[in-house]
Length: 423
Image (cartoon, rainbow, N blue to C red; front, side, top):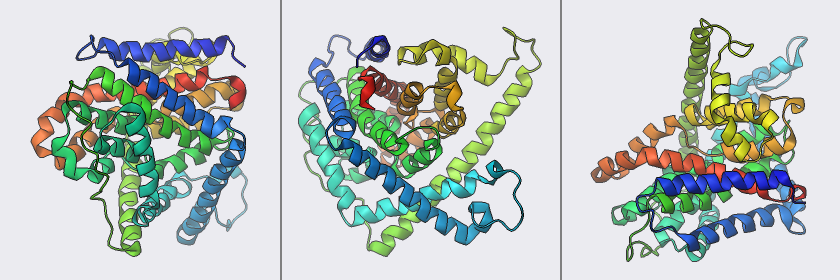
């Protein structure tokens, strides 16, 4: 059923396209055909995941897989950490809520999924899936083979790993293709973190795993479109790299598991450090803001300031105005801190304070690596792979950050504009 709230989400869709067009390198060349193709691909993927007969069984299967992975990870974590990871308690428990320890019950998922992803890549299962998506993006949006593959790989692995897949072609990428790869990397998330996000949201959002998976998949076409709007491809350039060979290889299954685990450990350590530092910085900022007089009946906090700044954008995505302050704060946290902190905060919002529609829209809006911290990761990681283009990467990265952030907003708007009975 289509209602006023669905039309409201179209405001956000128009806003994201309008902002990117206003900042385009060439506003005379708007890619209308690509825009129609990208939106059609997004709608098609949403209907495939949620709207077709039998899709509910697929959604249930995705949730079951995530539950199974979480249970298996919990078994491994309890073997190492015992009761701190949710094992049998050696003493009486008076507060069950205090048993949840984020470091021992969420972060280990990243290790397991990272190792599993490497193993599936070595077995060529994940490679076939990404090549399938690559062909889809190549045929529907006119991407070159290397760019299409990089976009598809970004759905499942990190934004630095995807350039490794097409490393042999990095020096052949045009400026527009380089920018596109950066934007899609910032607009999507890695498979290793998807399961962690789904685990965080599972208590408060039905079918959380399916929504998180869908968010990363359908944000890729949005990233392609907004990248092409902001840095258009010059006529006669791009689209020539139709080779799907990859330089991402493992020597054996054991090698894949070992290297995948070490890569996951690096991600876990980075996430842990970032969470500690940024949460501490927010607490410091709130302490400093507490020295100012109350504003509008309450003390100044980072949360309130971000909520005011981003509330109009949250409303444009389709969120009710009564919930736009909280949603706007989450958008600000995602951009200025990390999407991981934003998902934790989203999962902590009580059901009575945020409706299911708003929570669903925000799941899609937050599901991307576009945050200030990722700017340094992008420059460092891609600069190592392309040292001769480091200055070009630095010149594009902030623009890519905005496009990646708006890509997830575009996806959230599209989901908000879909009939309410679909999800």
